[in-house]
Length: 448
Ligand code: ATP
Ligand code: MG
Image (cartoon, rainbow, N blue to C red):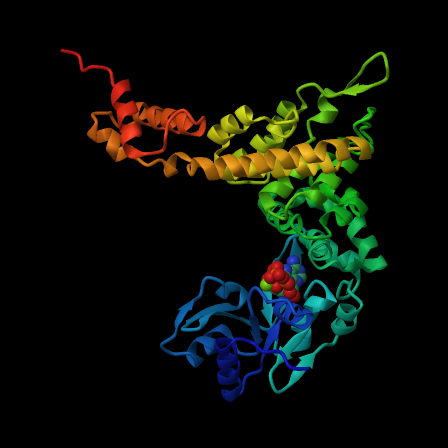
């Protein structure tokens, strides 16, 4: 078997070899290349110590930011290369990071510290594959299996539990029974991870094609990481609109949402307010009044705990708040949604409405889906007609308004917004003279 690392990686390998060191491509790049997927990056592991790596590449830009862990990053014309000295991890601290890093001359020892067998292979052009843990067989059988005993491996670093789910969700691999058991047993350690690390893993997991299946099978693990979602499971939706409880519905919506992190997060959280506001009327029908608002608040707290940047937090909570749009959506509401959400926001909202509709009971889903698709078609049509889908597309800009005597700040912003709304509503043509005329007319005469 031959894998083809990029030229700058092959250059690093051969120079290290010529100087008498071992050097191999390791980890995710070997896994992905064997699967025929484009590797995100090609990590190199070597027997050379960081200072020896530096000395082998004089004149190349180098970053030593990771040197304490044995990593030197070289900046080469073809791209950057991360080169890490073979290492074994010392004792683990707080189930998340090794207390110390020890270098070793042994590639096999370096691979032994890695999480899963499919991530513990090394490849070198000319030498081929080094695979002491039978990662290739697991790759061919599409199985995730810990290197070594699962329980202590997950206890050492609880992030591996989420990495396991992430690889299952992205690659569609099954989790070996013992590895699965170890991951489940160690889930109590997940609350000890930093919100940021949980967020990064889940944000990579959610767009995976198998995300809904994995989260269904491993819901106890997800609920250990995100206890706010646990009440969704078993929260019945006693009405003709639903076939699943809130959790089943959320995952079904997740499955139908486009694989974009923002939309997948919004789908996962869109009904998290339901258990908080559920009521049952005298006919036994469940109601969830204002669950969008309650959900947006709960989702906001959860996302803040996970360290989401505020622009994403706002986008996701806004989608959660407004996901239950009454259908059909007529032209007037589409125009006003355009004005409030902008084109990108509106199409994302409609994608979420569509995902949530597909997760309803069969009859309402069949009846309502054409209405959602109709709203999307209408939105596209209006967008094309107006040729102006956001205030930035106006045939006039802030500078034009300044030259008319508008003052910078809220007055100018409000005038642009009003012009944009009129254009979207079809009441004003998106042409400079018409826009200038309207803006001039709104100007209050200057005080004497
Ligand atoms: P991707 O880059 O697609 O996320 P990857 O497998 O390359 O996948 P990285 O986080 O880049 O993941 O890590 C590179 C390699 O380092 C992994 O393939 C694995 O061998 C090892 N590794 C990473 N994180 C851990 C961990 N928490 N425990 C053990 N080994 C790990
Ligand atoms: Mg990687």
